[in-house]
Image 1 (cartoon, rainbow, N blue to C red):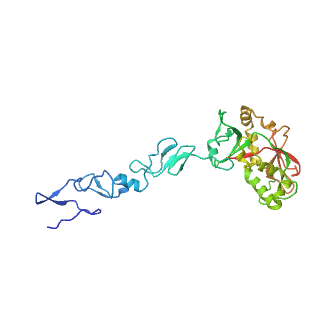
Image 2: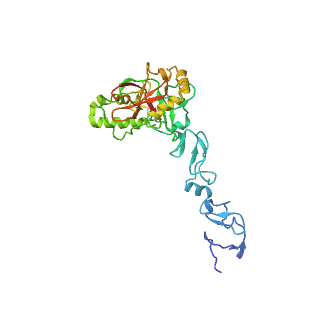
Image 3: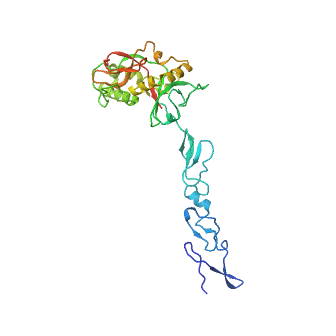
Length: 316
């Protein structure tokens, strides 16, 4: 008598075995190799007369082979991503403030001076600290460097410095800066503070090299600015665009309260006698937009070579 051997993928229901030199049929799934409760993703053969399966490997080995190895539990974890395999996941969903990196949920890195999306965890008028965190109240032991004045729909924010940098001309020449949009009306929809600033910095250096600060003094003063508490932010501060200045006015009461809470002057007094501030929003070849803190209004008739005040912002 020829004996057929069980192959993965066959549909044999009875496998003959020799018992006491007699050929008998067995209906015991475990004896025939059907030992698993289920096979992940349906891989394998179900016992024809029971609820057990024969799988290409154990459930644990199979799941690990295809990357299902994370419990997704502990600090910084919200849940597993996708369907589980043997109660484990291929990746995890991280809690707010954490990101999935190198196979684990780690504290989300905040880099001051560039958009990280971290501002979605903050709100306007929060205090921004040197470690990139923000809070509505004062946190002992942390160093405040600004107050949040704008948060975009992309989770990118800008914070206003706690000090002004003085009064300087926007420019000493009448030039329409290439790649810088000219606003005919008040630039309340311009939020590109740092992009505007970078555009002018790049243009001026390309034109004048090391003498660029003579032609665009305000932008280079801002470029070289950094609070003494966080000098590594040098080159990362920007002249606020018109829309950011408008956001400051719209939220002025709350922002003033935060400034006062950390013993800093209010918006109207952040620079002594600051009757108007320059924005980085351009009007034409000969003028740029001014902003008036007490009224929140804008003026475009101020020639670029006139002096006006600056208070920088930083992205985060």
